[in-house]
Image (cartoon, rainbow, N blue to C red; front, side, top):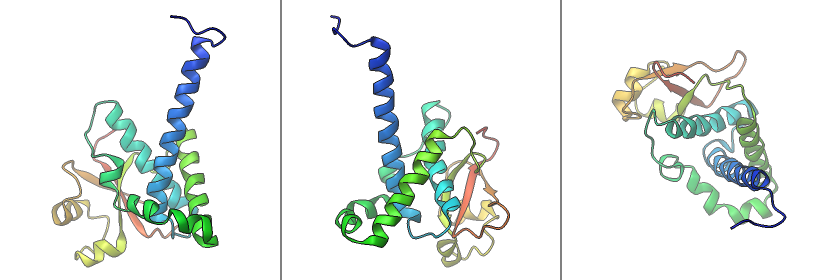
Length: 173
């Protein structure tokens, strides 16, 4: 059956755009929940790229990850704070910045994280006895972050991120 007045190519493009907008919003929820209070916009962008990288690697069938909603604990913060986002200037600003980071990640061809697929707060690592976040072997062993061997991704010069970022050793971004 042919739909009159709608080109098939146009319909497909529209579906792709709807899906991309869904991914942007889901990514923004993670960024807001996990890094919304972080002052460095570059760190928010890195968090958004982690979500995108995981999605893309899983889509290619190379690696398996849990769903965004299950794997990122901060995702729940968005659901709990929906009212606050509308009524609180600071929460609204954090949401807008998170959405901006998600948009940038999904529309950019450049990945500043070089394929990072995990991030953990440095504070959490310290609580677990890991003082040096570059020791990915300890991160994997002590907090069971991944079934895959990890390597630390160093933040850009001049940035002091609140989170440590990791990529799968040997994976191509």
